[in-house]
Image (cartoon, rainbow, N blue to C red; front, side, top):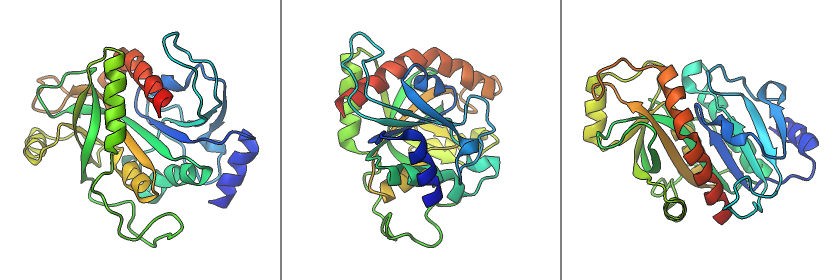
Amino acid sequence: MQSTIDFINQKIGNIKPEIGIILGSGLGDFAQGFPSVCIPYSEIPGFETSTVQGHAGQLVFTQPHASLSSHLSPLTSHLVMMQGRYHFYEGHSMEKVVYPVKVMKKLGVKTLIITNAAGAVNPGFKPADLMLITDHINFMGTNPLIGENDEALGTRFPDMSEVYKKKLIDLAQKSAEELELEVRKGVYAACSGPSYETPAEIRMLKTMGADAVGMSTVPEAIVANYCGMDVLGISCISNYAAGIQEKPLSHQEVIEVTNIAKDKFKSLILKIIEQI
């Protein structure tokens, strides 16, 4: 990992990121327009290349600057953003999937905002809604902390009582209210993918208490929590899950709906960052 950190530090100079953001499918546009240093994953030692549509595949480092939105205050924190992630279903090991989160920790990130596109399990949700994640269900069949433990990063058996920090959920709720945006709250279930879930699986997840389902976020949240970072999770509801909508599911629909929601998503994230 040290070679990764050394390479990045050579590229970013005096930028010291305090907030990290993982931008999910179709949400990568948030990173555009900032004064920044961009580093493609393909150039970073230890990183992999994302192969999924809607994931640009680069780290974006920003410096404090005048706000991009007239009704928001200037930003005061350095940021590092993953403009796209890589996934377990792409064939990467869990160790590789969560490696960037550990790198962010080593770079000094204290707060991690994890975003994704998700299918609605809760029939009261609708496409283009934003959901603040209150808890998760790990249905991926594995755990990113399996293997030798690095005591420098975290304890062997980390507590999971409050992975998604209530103080950040409250801050995000307050930010949404100030922007007059309606947001949902709910439990996110993570499955391995890449196939979408069956109607029977969705009925099971609903019975278990899930409100939305996706193929990411949970491994990153587990590791961020393990590393002592404060985590905020936000899902963009991109479609109804199988059995809730009649038409077949597609990744193209995910991209189209997140494009519709990206303006309110961007406003909300900027407002949250302003107040962290």
